[in-house]
Length: 138
Image 1: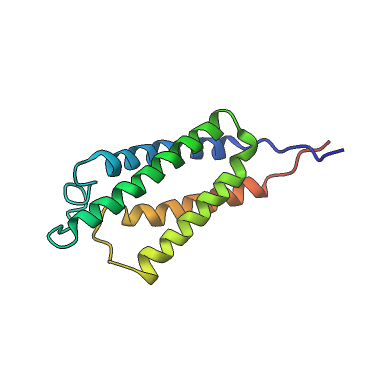
Image 2: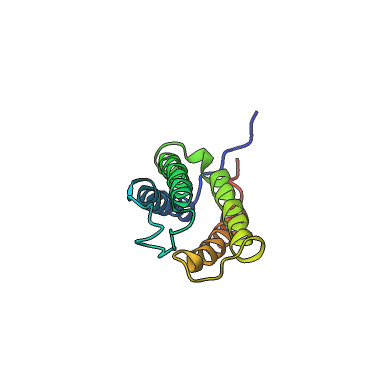
């Protein structure tokens, strides 16, 4: 006999929908803008290494599109994976926070710098909420 499965909270499902839409939007910008957003959005100097920066951002965009589709699919159809996917997103946010502000920091003058901090905080709170809820009786 298996343990009763836990239905994800509306907060978790809603957060996955929001993350999915954000990832689709920013992934599309990186993948489909001519400069991957490096110049027109981030105002990076593309004089040296521009093609490499554009390529790397476009490849990141492809991954973000894939992540966004997975997040929306889990929220819509495969909710049993919602809490584990939220945990993966929190891990990704914490690693991104470490990279952005500790190991490979370029400062805070780029789009998304504040978003990295906000997403790590929101995902941490959502994880505490999701795993702090009472377990179903059964």
